[in-house]
Amino acid sequence: MPVITAKKQGTCTAEGCGGRILRGELCWYEAATGMRHLEAACRGADGGRRPNLRAGRCRCGAHVPPREGHLTLRGEKSFRGRVRKLWAVNCARCSHTAHDG
Image 1 (cartoon, rainbow, N blue to C red):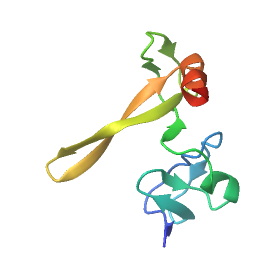
Image 2 (cartoon, one colour; image 1 turned 90 degrees about the horizontal axis):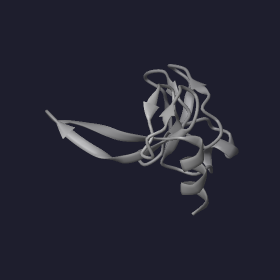
Image 3 (tube, helix red, strand yellow; image 1 turned 135 degrees about the vertical axis):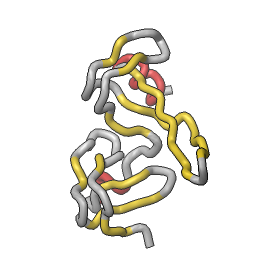
Image 4 (tube, rainbow, N blue to C red; image 1 turned 180 degrees about the vertical axis):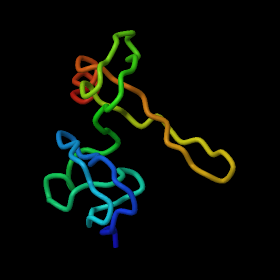
């Protein structure tokens, strides 16, 4: 069953939410989409995208300040038995074109 108790705090990965999930809070979890709030709107939102909490550079070359644009899952990398997710920053313009197309 995908309802878990969060072992550490994190960010809801649902499109348009980005709210905090606190340690010990019940949340919806799937490996492909990450942690989400239990609300139906968060649970059923688009997967593979999460809010951008750090500054970065988009694939088009634009600087993306924190809390603007989105992150898209690029892939996973294994190192010493641990799996690390790799995220790409998309500016607001590229986020909309990628989401619409």
